[in-house]
Picture 1 (tube, rainbow, N blue to C red):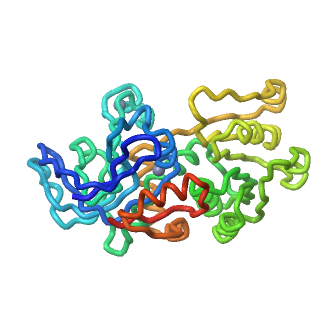
Picture 2: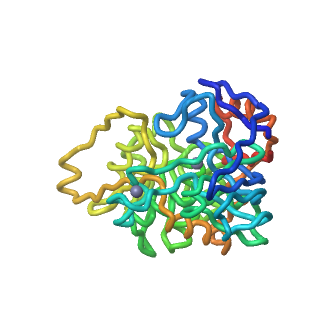
Length: 339
Ligand SMILES: [Zn+2]
Ligand SMILES: [Zn+2]
């Protein structure tokens, strides 16, 4: 089968890869849709992922497909079923799994290899994080479940209430998914981000105001322009926007530091402001089987318009060139890869 193989820093090659025979409990999927993601771009730029990937390796983690082969002991599944799979499966017996925090599982098993014609689903994932999709759900929409599940996790931690004023910092796919869900929960949403097209998409998804974040934007002018903010979500992953989030939230407000910064990043927070303004600070990582299921529900009931997040389509062969473009800063929200 054909697959994109990451050989190192900024080195993707489309190669013919041997299909592995299935072990007990495993399934093979014929991949119908894969989506690009900021995490994959980071992996491309660095040439590896500390927790998940050592080159040469297949990669990509947002996918949906059709079961093409079933291993021994997978009687609940049949060839031809349309499914979406999460990119991880928790162990089910560590402290975190037993306390409904499977996103923090001590032994999270990751799945990579979405940029390929087929993929083997390990038995733990078949048991814990594989879902049938409706015949009316597009594969490309189903592939959005993984990033949306992270956003659902972020909102489960943030607990927004209807009528609250929320600011999303960041207009990438994650920021835009926050806009979509916060709006559907009855929040008034403002977006601070970059790129006219992405900000326009934020409006289409229900944002009431958009502000272009410039290098010379002053905190005071942003505070004046944005007004009282009950909730601030940082969906960029840079120390400057983490610091900005804390400065923009109202007294007694909540901040979710959702965007992950590179390892070793330090941020400067004013401890006085955190204490005397009674700021609630939190961060959210990854997803659980429960938030994954709920994300799929939002896609299938139409409350999140998945198609809005996918702005272009490429063939698998074009992937090396696409990642070059992305590394140069292309502004597509997400690209659908069709094997
Ligand atoms: Zn992703
Ligand atoms: Zn566990």
